[in-house]
Image 1: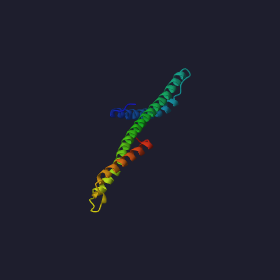
Image 2: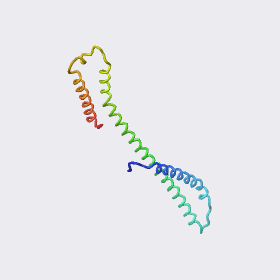
Image 3: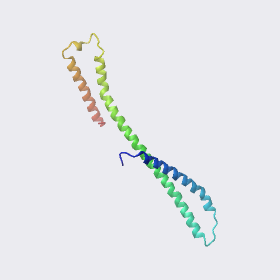
Image 4: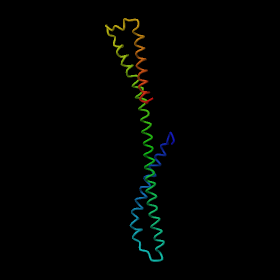
Length: 147
């Protein structure tokens, strides 16, 4: 599978699907004409060949239309998978930074009576707590096999 599929290739597949559908409709409309022809005894083999060819063409264009649908479905599935991978990465980043942003938000409120602000270990303990939260999130993701 190619990593990047050109946009004009997708347009070509849509065009092919549309043309195959049109040709199949024309063949189905001409089915009555082919079946209504009465052939003489000496022309019956030729008439049967025409019927067989007509049936073969109907089946061929049906297969082309089905293949085009399958290719478009594969393309849409690959696009959805790429989108899911991006969303997964963004979710991982947001989960890492959400608790850290919460901790920073609490300490950025400048309350008058926060005992940790007067302690000489307040800043290092906060940094250590943020590091521990990040490590816990990392191991949780590893255990869930999301990383």
